[in-house]
Image (cartoon, helix red, strand yellow):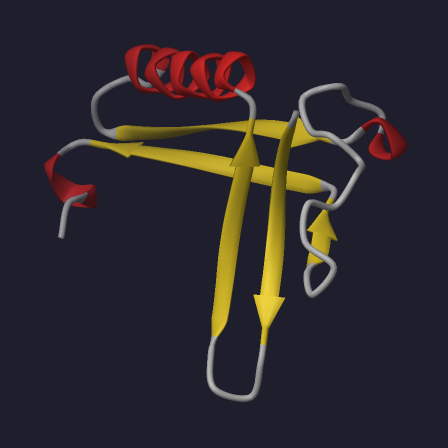
Length: 85
């Protein structure tokens, strides 16, 4: 199970990531692969989708009643000195 959920209120917005140990380990591995495969001076990206959006990376069951399930997560890797802040 891996979900990204938006908790929005008048005071703030928060993204909560819920995951099983296996899915969190896979997510960490995917992030490291993205970093490794991004060339210096460029950016690269990856997508995570729920099954309703054509993928199997994200679960479709909310873990919190007060949240909104996010069905598509796009992760960008910006690599190089011109991208660092």
